Image 1 (cartoon, rainbow, N blue to C red):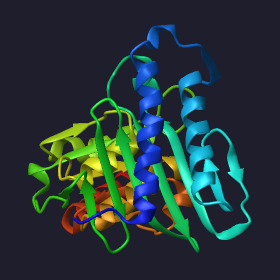
Image 2 (cartoon, one colour):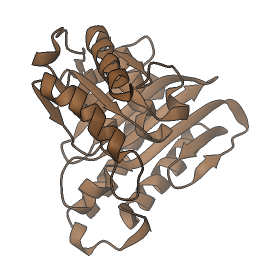
Image 3 (tube, one colour):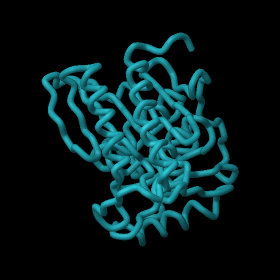
Image 4 (cartoon, rainbow, N blue to C red):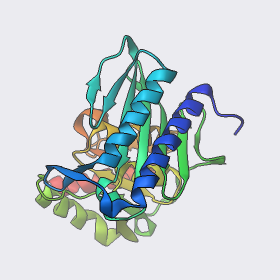
Length: 265
């Protein structure tokens, strides 16, 4: 592609800056001060520092825009048409265990529609970005979802409920409908990167339930701009509200949602 749009220039620069902060802490992860928010849900000083960087830089670049952030929650802006949806560290548990699979996720919502998304893995220096009508990219490489049509050749990503979360029995039923019929199921611990990898054609599909808007907003833009399709896991369209998501190319999404429906029968 040509030069990044002014919007994506801001978003990628902010993601990179937050990522550099995360990388510095990741190299010294065993010494991080960590507080516990809830069962298996940790928040670190690194997470908070990255969010501060993103909040400050985006506020400076686009004064008045609102925010929906993992730590700050809802921050109302004077510009009611625009809202940033931000996860400063998706894959916190991976980060805290020294696993280089985590991401900064930044999306922009305009008049209630997701119009741009950036997902950056600082450990691998992979910057995924997309803007409505301009395609999805990994740095300067155009991304496309896979064209695979047969479910038994597909690699499907998912997330599973952990300690303190509901839905364990339901997940096992869904896994039973999907795992025996695919080439493989992967659980890597970052929904943002799962969606980026669907957009990049590394995964053929993805599903997960009970996610937060900041987990998936940027990834939704990436998958759609890479030619993919996204819906609620049960087939609806209100993904950010329910947090239940399925994604893939048209054939994969149809097969995936059909199998998830069968698991609920």
